[in-house]
Amino acid sequence: MEADFGSELLGQRGDGATMFAGRSALMSILRLAVPMVIALILHSALLAEEAALLGKVSSVKLAGAALVFPWLTLLGMMAAGGVGGGVSSAIARALGAGRRSEVLELIGHAVLLAGVIGLVLSAGLAIWSREIFAWQGGVGEVGETASTYGVITLAGGTFMWTANILASVFRGFGNTILPSKWNALVSLVIACIIPVAVLGAGPIPAFGVEGAAWVMVLYYFVLTLVFAWQLLKHEVGRAGRGKAWKFSWRHVGEILHVGGPSAFNTLLSVSTQLMATTVATKISQDALAAYGAISRIEGLLMPFVFGIGAALVPLVGMNVGAGNWTQVRKLAWTGAGLGFGVSGIVGVFMWLFPRVTMRFFTNDESAIMAGVHYLHWSAWAYGFWGLGVGMTFSCQGARRPITSLVASTARCVYVGAGSWWLLRPPGHGTSALGMVMGSSAIVFGISAIMLAGPLLPDWMRFGKKTPMPE
Image (tube, rainbow, N blue to C red; front, side):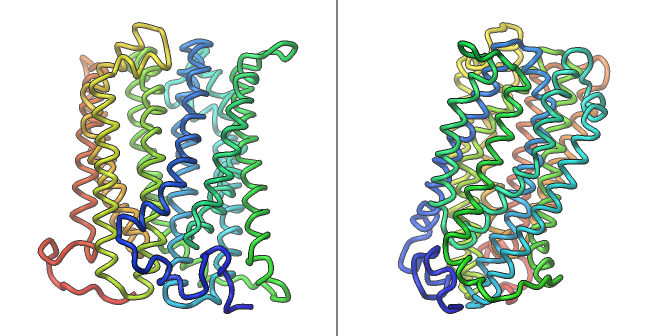
């Protein structure tokens, strides 16, 4: 039974490192990335739909939800790209090295970590939500809206954590089709429910912000149930029969060696977003509404970049486990180039057509103009952000999480200094905020490339040219 473990998920019976043998780096990445990109586009469209519905109710509701969005992003990124990246990397490296007996143990520890960490973070944020939003500058109706929306969505963050960790388990096997298929299906169903929940229909009353919040909790609850069912339905359930599961700090350490720094990296990324949100709050309510909308728009980049990055983690991990560093470097640079290209194209479109972009969210001319000024100075640099994200995901797979941590620290410090400048008298508008955020993307991208270590070609590296084995 152990020899066959994971064969149904992998689609073959050899070692994980042979999974994509014979394919180019580009085709290997696209094979895993495309299903995730499609599913995540639908997910991001769902978030954009929610923002658009709240914006149609009033710009105040959109501004209130904008205060909560960075914290929801934090929970999602820490689970999917942080600890989830550690889960995918650990499983992929074990398969690449032929250590298939460890995989079931890693899955059990991943689920345990998801439950514990998700519960602690979600409960803490929900309990202190009112104080957090007040600290961000949410007062009056904006603050009340943020509290109403935030308590519900943050309290349901445990489901967000568990769903993302379970999806990361599938990605570690190199199976992106199954979780992506169900994610897309559930997103489509929820997209039909949320307009009714927010605006009402027929005898169903309009629940406004509360309706939007409860529907988002329902979304992650359903995904958790579906992913757990699918995981047990496949060979994981059969392989575990008759075997006593034992807790091991070694397996926890293997996941958190990558997942811990990567999760802290997401905290730095969201801290950067929080600083920008705080600055927007101080500028004006229109600036906050504009930045809240733009945050959702920037989220449309995530399906493409995260899809590429999440594909890189198992591919790089399996090749690192097998000791194939030549292929590792090909994958890393192909992924970084894809991240730059996709993000750059979206950013240039938003830079050329900022008014069209903003009108999707609001008809308030003041908020539209604030968003136009911001995008004029920031959207052109999005390609560098995609470049950095692509490389940092490859470093996750290579068990080198320090790269993303340092690159995100550099960006966070840069934005912190910029925020201090923006808040100094006489104050600045959204154009200056956009300039700071755009240039910070360049800082992040260049830092990630320069710190990639063994993933760099020989001519770009200093010191020892051959990477040490894991």
